[in-house]
Amino acid sequence: MHIYADADALPGAIKEILFRAALRRGLGLTLVANKTLQVPTSPHISTIRVGQGFDVVDAAIVEMVKPGDLVITADIPLAAQVIAKEAHALNPRGELYTKDTIQSRLTMRNLLAELRGGGVITGGPAPLNNRDRENFANQFDIFLTRQARG
Image (cartoon, rainbow, N blue to C red):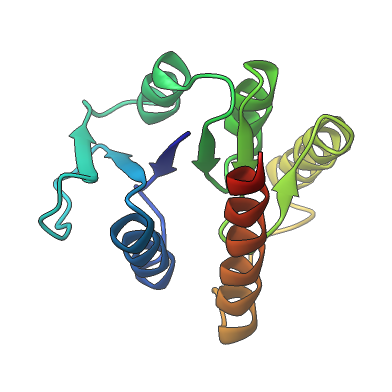
């Protein structure tokens, strides 16, 4: 299993959790972004810088991901593509997207985008807080433990 992170808007606290896990467990971790990222020096951690443009990071991740891999992303359409490739997707707040939940998440995302487009709803998600970071760390650890057990 390899871990890919949609790193353009990934909070630093989540990156730190990913770095620690990659270093401690010897897991492959690749952060994909359209900007230069600073990461710890490790044979297990790498970055890929892609060009600017709409969904360029998503396309790169979808091209690389294999069945069983894990993608860290808050991007619901990317999560849907990852799941379609028999991989796993976990958002930075600790929600594991599944085949059972992804369609309803896509539908809700599209509805909210329509409402925002019509001026009904403004703003985005609340900033990541300590509880979110804790939830991500717990869910990430549960996922890794299950994967290790096979």
